[in-house]
Amino acid sequence: MVIIIAGAAVVLLTLWVVSCRRRLAVMDENVNNAMTQIGIQLSSRFDALTALLNLTKEYAAQEAQTLIETIRFRRSTITGTSTPDDVLKQEDVIAEALGRICIVAERCPDLQANENYAKYMNAVDSYEKMVCTSRLIYNDSVTKLNRELRMFPTSLIAGAFGFRQREYLEAVEDSVDKSNMR
Image 1 (cartoon, rainbow, N blue to C red):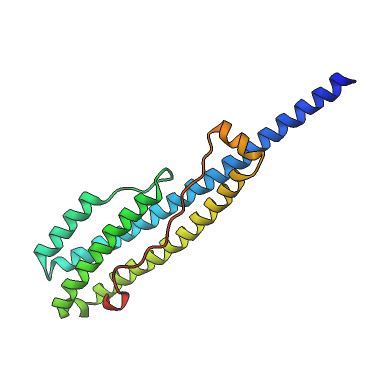
Image 2: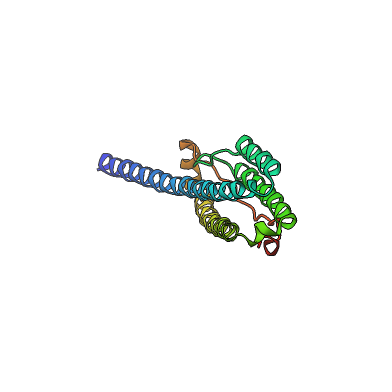
């Protein structure tokens, strides 16, 4: 009888550990997926920004070429394993480029009046909104994972299987006044 009870306890403990491990793996994957989504949105935003820069070339070739080279040099891909700091660096590159485009647009009223300028600027803004939504999803996923990792006895299993708490994406102040973009 004792052997049966001990065997049942071992089976129940094993099932609980497996269940815990699976739940943590799903949560960890949700965080990775959310970070990847941010990367996709940032990549789309970079593409819209590049189109805007190509349009700017017609009005200020030297400035646009310098910006394009800067973006190529500083642009990196955001993946599921990227950190919040990686995202912030990419957002800084975008903010810097947008600021410089706005300066060019102020000097070139014809650029601001260009229909494509407004279209590309709206695309950049639209992708920014998608990045904000993706950030919310990422932070929500991180909250769920971190909360689970702090709970006892799950914390013991998490440590044994190498799960770790994740950092949040902090809110970013937009360094470019959106009203100046149009």
